[in-house]
Length: 388
Image: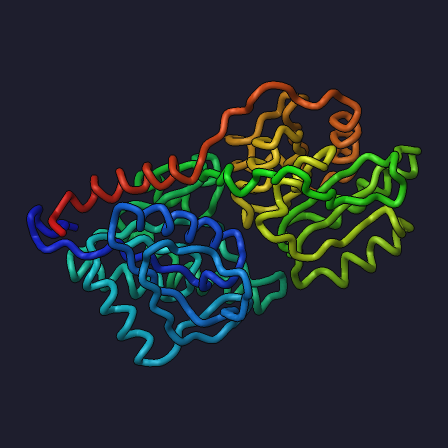
């Protein structure tokens, strides 16, 4: 596709994200951290939905304009409905210098790439995960239909697709079909939000003051693998290890995980903290003995919590999924990686890191500024400079 010729009128970067800044999911953290940084040097327009817009602590979008369009939630994902919403979306695409769309965004991605091609606007798809809509036969049919009718047509029409890792792109049954289009841009972290103000009180209070602390931070959903972490903690405690688990986050599996902890006899050795705001994360990471993210499927690319924990000097345990393998060290000092769904290996890794001295030195840190810079270079390469 030919971009608009250099020197033509330049519009904004249009960023299309499924959920609004009020929702604090991993995709939204990624999308809006970048929007905030783009808007420091470029005009930016965000198009998102009204789904889950009731949050009280929205992510910053800097000076970007935000357009909210109607949608309803199906299978925990927004489905854009109504002619007015589609018109607003198309108008934003037609006005753009370049479009960045965060996937999966069912059927919006298909429309946007078609409209952009007609308008001569380059499109970059940021591919967060292989969308799956459940385990039952009906859900599997929906997943197959989504991939065939929306994801693959969008990937075929886009100018570039960004993945957090090449390994993820090769392993994905969807991305592996378009590998020549894949650009790897590693995600970053925000060191400023991890600073702990002097005199801040501790956040983690174990039942036994001598207990070693394992922390999980994230949404309580199936692909995060928290049941295996509970099993690992139970195994450690049966073996006599004085360890307690702190689970920070909320999600649909909270009741199920609470029941599982009780069934395992963990009692007061597991603490469900609920949502933890940004300004408390630095304390949480630094008070942990180990931060664990035992993800079990390609629905997780790279857990940002592991990167943030390492930046705070805390060792981490992850799983041998492609994105994690490319970004998290398996050196036995800063981190260890174990096979997904292996509670015994997870327990062994936790024991090893909890018994080792805390890592020393200043770890290398990739920031969101670095990630935004790489994206802007990609945008300029695809669309050219243009004029304001």
